[in-house]
Image (cartoon, rainbow, N blue to C red; front, side, top):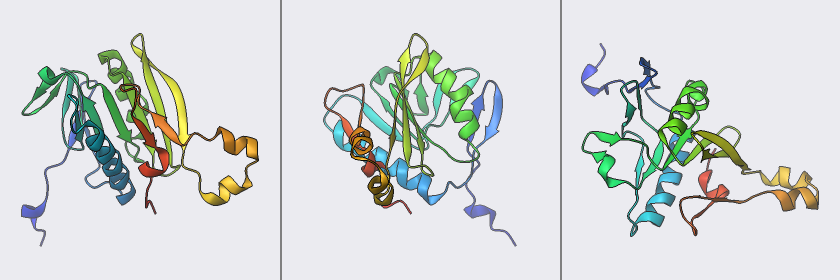
Length: 189
């Protein structure tokens, strides 16, 4: 017999007016990555006015688009309500899962840009990469892709190739916030 008392209600998003069920349990790699990013943001923002949020907080962009980003930073406290965020966060991080990648790269990305999100990260635990997109007149433009290369791959690179590997992500919201790419994927299996 199934114990329904232990089941959590399914998480869902509203994308272009359509209810989209989310994965009930993400992979451990997904959870590790979002936890690392969330902790990095929390530590940096501890004594600053902006607030980081992680998985489970709803964002209401408009009547047809309600999302649950993996991590976000909100600087406008007026949009923070007890039941969620009503408006555009300043930075949004989506950690890719096989079932969410299409929406994270498609309609959600477009709606975040149109709503005024300043910076959007797409993080892939599989490729150990972070794509950083910046706001530009209502749409996102790719700023850079950061990859946490394993030692064996770095050793195969030429000195010139290794010199081009970017090891820190510059967060556009702050002059002094840099995220080490290796820290995002720390202890990832």
